[in-house]
Structures are given as C-alpha cells and as structure tokens.
Image 1 (cartoon, rainbow, N blue to C red):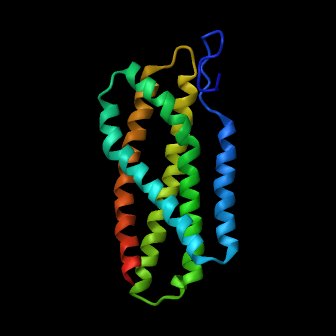
Image 2: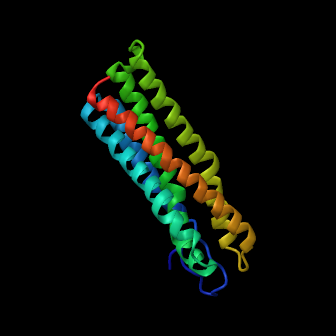
Length: 194
C-alpha cells in the first residue's frame, strides 16, 4: 500500500510521499550535468523541456482544470485533489527551479547579459516574468498545496478552509497561466532573434 492510500485501519490518509524526492534529485542532477557539461544543446534541451512542462501544466491548471474544479462538489473535488496536489508539491517547484536556473545559465553562456538596449529589455522582461512565476509558485502555490494536503489528511477536513485555499490556488494558477503566455511571447522573440 502506498502513502497515497488509506492505511489498514481506514481512518488515516497520508498524501505526501517523500520518496518522490528521488525524482526531484534526479531531475536536478540532470540539470547540473547539463550546466557543467559545456554542451549548449544539452543545456538548451533541459531548459526548454522543463519550461514546456511547467508552462503546459500551468496553462492546463489555470484555464482547463481550474474552471472544472470550481464547479465540482466537495467530495468530487477532494477525490481529484487527493491525487493531484501531492504530485504537484514535487513537480512544479522542480520544473520552476530547473527552468529558471538553466535559462539563466544559458543566457550567460550565450552572452545575453552583455546585450545593449533595446535588446536587453527582452532579457529583463524574461527575468522579471520568471522571477514572478517562481516567487508566486514557491511562495503561494506550494504552501497552499501543502496546507490542502495536510487538511485533507485529517479525518474531518474543514470544508470552509479547503474552499478558501482551493479558490486562492485556482486564482493563482490562472495568473500563472497568463504570465506563462507572456513568457512564451518573450521566448518566441529570443528564438527569432533579438
């Protein structure tokens, strides 16, 4: 039986499986390898893959799942969030850290920090958006995710707290989705040439 399931007594629900940290460590190790390898293709691949996953999940959460989740009754919402939120605790912070760190490293290697104006405005725009995304993700979404998981582990979770937290979480993911569209526009400019 995994930590995602009810224990033998049927009264305790443990959602957060810290064994997932091995996947976080593996992903960070791949990023580290890409950074020290000197291979720009590999570094770009890691940055783009993590960025695509982060952006895609944010857009899906904010614009597809969020509106659906808002309309579900508490029991259906609980069923979905007990499976989704524990995975998001590990996945999203890892993707955001890899995307931003690999992107910074790549920008340094490609000389983007040495550009003059107005080209450097695009670099600044990317740095501002990635900072906002990461701070909101680690400072708002991650703690809210943990609170929701801890509350759902209780035998009698407080539905009012859950409703407030999930509403805040869904608003934040919608904002994340809008910022992700912004970063797509900025990155399209990078690819087409500053």
